Length: 181
Ligand code: ZN
Image (cartoon, rainbow, N blue to C red; front, side, top):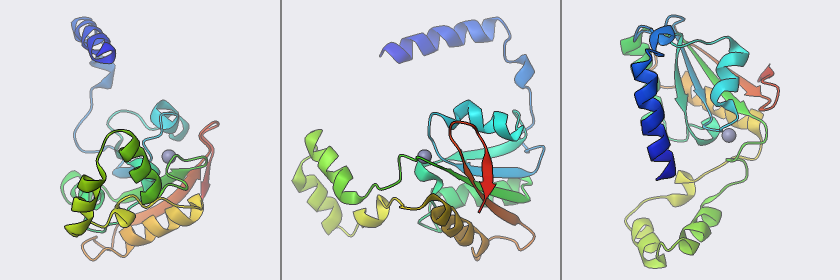
């Protein structure tokens, strides 16, 4: 609740002082670019700053680990919308070192759920109705390999036009340095 109140207070002031003016941008990404990256807090401002990306330049999609495991899930949907509706012609996947999605798996997450009051019966019910929690909560061991896998899923996607370039990088979450993989 504390966050909600301070956010609302800040927002009122932000709008009243017209602080939004420097952020004016078009809905079409100016650089025809989509970036798929991780939700890690350290990348929030570091990633755009380290890449020279400003408001209006790119569609930035942030998900845990920057992993696409389902070619017909919501992340691929966003990328296809970027390409077909918003003029994106280049997709960059950026994983990072020391990622919270590294080493996670369904058993660790299920244990946490149980300790937070989700019942075993509910977990069993979800699994017995055909939901593959192992796949749903799949993490990765090696960041570079995971980025390469996600790049491959995007590149090979049957609905992605061939003219779209797809690249992968690993970022250092402290310095912002990127390395192509
Ligand atoms: Zn991460």
